[in-house]
Length: 279
Image (cartoon, rainbow, N blue to C red):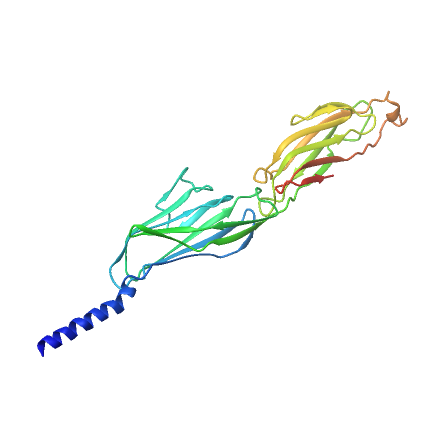
């Protein structure tokens, strides 16, 4: 009888172990979510990494969570603070954020909040960024689900011209200013290959221009390269000086004071590669 009981007990214990084994050896759970799925360039999102050591007993050994900062984003802050940031250590695109938790006891849930900001000015009208985090433990690893964030932007620049000296008199210098303004860093785009052209009013004689402006055949041209939303504001102001000789028939009004008007044009490329023009 004792032999039978022993056999039965062993069988029950074995069966119980088989029943409990999947729970004891359960796979950890690792997820990643985001608080906003659509933002403007220059705005930030908060990702949440959640790791659960879903064992009934023991430890998930050597747990490390890593997250590579996606292209066009910059690290802002996280709770807890990363144990290490690769590269420059500041959290630029392509650098890796690492949190090392060591051995994590069964049933423990770890949650990390990570704020990343979409770099201002560099996105086209609509860009979807996909990001995935990695958990390593017990010598293995697992990936979180892919998380998508769509970044939107549009070029939003203004160009204004003003005469900054007094009344226009014959042979006196006349000062003009061209003011290029952006609305700030949120939701706008840098402009590349920017050129500003100002056709001089009839009869005007060019004297000088700021910011490398040059005159040819009655047109003043500035080759400005890239207008960066992080540099403007403050506004970029271009100036030039002309005069209107009385000996020029176009300026000989007989009264000595004249009014002259003309328009200025800015051209460039937006972040979608499309031509962009302001007049």
